Length: 386
Image (cartoon, rainbow, N blue to C red; front, side, top):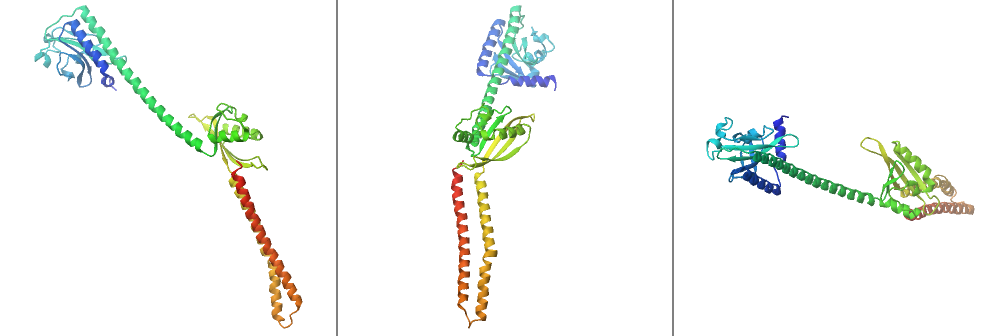
């Protein structure tokens, strides 16, 4: 990137100035014109093609000029003041349109506005239609006021940059705040228990479900910064510590815990210990997520009971029912063969066989009813346990 390109980029930083600064500039050009006793004074910014008047006295409605047709084209190449007592006698400027034609400028003096990073972005200058010889007071005033103009430009740009940065920061904070609100809403609306644990086992964050569970079951209140073991189920402190240590080493741990077995509040949890890493891939904590799986466990137990009942029924059907049925079938064959010689004992055998068959059928029905009843009693207990 050339110095001229960088200089133009510096000019572009200052093209948009606040109205208050423009008012200050108008006062400064009036002041320097009065000190130098000239009719024309300008504060201008100069890009690659144009000279833009940011404040002007004595130029009428003009607010810009072509860079190549200006005295200031030369001024921005210098580090100090440029004084041209009589432009008609200076080969650099004698052929400029403003010198050869109306308004026939003869005198010019200007100082470059050099930024803190060394780029001449514009000028403060005075002009007259007659030759002028400046005294030391006027020269010093032009230099001093030139520095003040540059200070005002850079101060205004800094204020604008700070304001823009502040607005951007405010917008970013609002976005972050909105995201945090939404995340917290999702976090708190979950029926699962969620907690973030630091490397020292301190609680970094938790959701409403975690708070309510610990409060209702252990009579303790979770708070950020508290040690996890101060609010945990004492029965599982060793296992809890061991699993968190594994997660802090980078492992993902999944376990199932049966809490308060053989009590009315018995329940099962599936717990996941997930290591949390920063951008440098270093584990900085553990996410503990616990899901109540009591329903699934009881459903599985229910299915096991049903399967056991079905196996029992299948056994009865395949063995115990087939025997009386086979006996009946045999009796029927005998009856057919001895139709005319039926003995009363056959009827007793038939009655006994039918009664046995009826008992087996009642057993099947009874076991089915017990299975159904156990299922009905198990599900309501589940819903109130955790």
